[in-house]
Image (cartoon, rainbow, N blue to C red; front, side, top):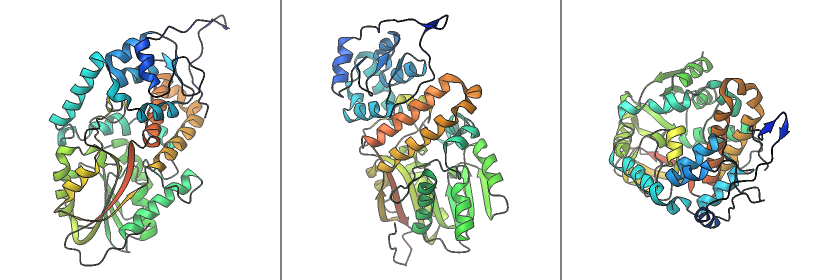
Length: 393
């Protein structure tokens, strides 16, 4: 898919100036060859460099430098999503050189040694990302503003795919009229509203974003839904069912035991808990420094082993459903909607935000297309539950 860019060529009196591209360093060409990517090549996934400063930034901080250089217009690519798919399949993170490699190791150790998702940091991601602007998310998402992977098995549109995902969640939870549902990470209230309207349940939801909460509360008016600005560690009460969609990525390994222990306390003995989260193959996979700085600060994706270890003794695993390939399609659908809406958003956000948002969505699409990233729905039940659980799709 040919991607447009808001960056214009260098002009003088409306006449294009022809400037030969800077000569790329051979060592970088050799590294990129592993992914079948060329600098200033002719294929849609090749990198086109406008400013040689880009090379210094990449050598200094690797993926962080690559992303910041793109945000500043120092290079372009017609198909960013395919570029990232190739880079991730070739494990380009392990190819970092010199100072960049040292920085990546330091970043990995920072996540390993420190609790970056402690209670006093819980609201940082809300302020930086989810409070970015409700108009951006309204333009990009479906009508219910569901900001997580859609389910495309029988869907043709984003609207249909998100409806299918919400209904699948409610059916997996086996929601019944009059039950209480806790939604940990309720976003703009889309799932809470859906469950209350269609399944007749009473919902309590929490978010760490003030902007999300303000819009969500307006959307659920008149329904048995209570939404709060609150960290999950402060939740109290007992609920028949618990759901968490796209929030566990912000919990962090040092808090997994606390998280699952707390959810178990909140869940009624006969209850069920659906955990919807992005996952990775190995605990050795690091958080991308660019994503950490510009999109989801302090985030850390879990591995299957980390989830299973933390769940052990607290819940029974009833079902583990992976549909990670659907996230690629979801992200591309978000991008198409965002790009169509950009003329109305441009005056408020500017070119650098556009390039940052495009880079974010495209690198995430490549992450799932390369199969580096997975999307799991893990169905858990309270160990005291007596009824047999039957898995649903």
